[in-house]
Image (cartoon, rainbow, N blue to C red; front, side):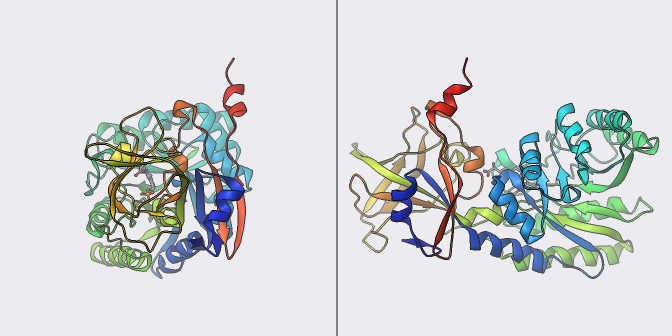
Length: 411
Ligand code: LLP
């Protein structure tokens, strides 16, 4: 099997396994899919990459080259952007519990917009703005109460969500009072994010409609950011909506709703993460053991929940192939299990695969989002290397962690 002209067996020889492989061209195509279609002649538009999905310097360089903006949620993601000289005016800083250190770093580096989650955070921001004599653009994260049909752990907009504030709640009104009296805080609009891996665009339309209704109460045109969450194809049952359709539908809905309500907005933003990187990513493993139990056939791989926690955490489904046997009869029903000391360390349950032998390579598809970024060192597993491939060339963008690196922090 080749990815963008590069043989994966060659990648195994060169970088070993487990290995995260990204098709660079695919990432670029995805970014352009949004950038070219999320446009309106009625208001400005902005597409942000939600870096939590996959954040390494080379990825953020691609985002920069494409001309996209960036969503960061932590000092680490912010510093990654700084490390590649990202235009800070295009950075949106999210998070429900930003520390003084994080806000200070954002102010010092003139981050374009801080998305404020709650009143207490706004007070901290106001105090730090005063201290550093800096002004700051903000969006308020609103909980619009729209619940998208997705896994309950990744729905973020139900009424008791830890994210955002309810419109006209006491928390919200306190924020607006502070803004009115502030010489530093420049209120620009609202943000909402209704969940992740969503296939139903009506959920976004409902959220947008709520935001636009709220905009009617403001005299100035506001910025609306409707978050990310666009679904991708992990397995055949998943039917993602193409980028151009997502983009054009949202723009269309927004234009119609603005016209109906006879108001204007300054800008509409979206911030996809998963849909930019998921399908461009693969994880390559070596099968180290095969075991039959009364009811199961296990293929044991040399990674697992430490490089992909999603099956254990969300019962996420994946597709896989055995390298060199892609066209062979899938005669076995297999459970692909990782090597962690944990029964739940199962990457794929009951997948039809060809007969494999020890040493075969197994590749999982669509692992580009929230795999590397949610990886862990459980059982002192080492974070795998990340390699980008493009048009027959491979490029190491993050080397494999070493045992020494793991141990050197421990006193
Ligand atoms: N914007 C905000 C404010 C978000 O909270 C998120 C994701 C995104 C954008 C990007 O959403 P995306 O387009 O990637 O769906 N770890 C989970 C996903 C958590 C998503 C958290 N927020 C998973 O692996 O499925």
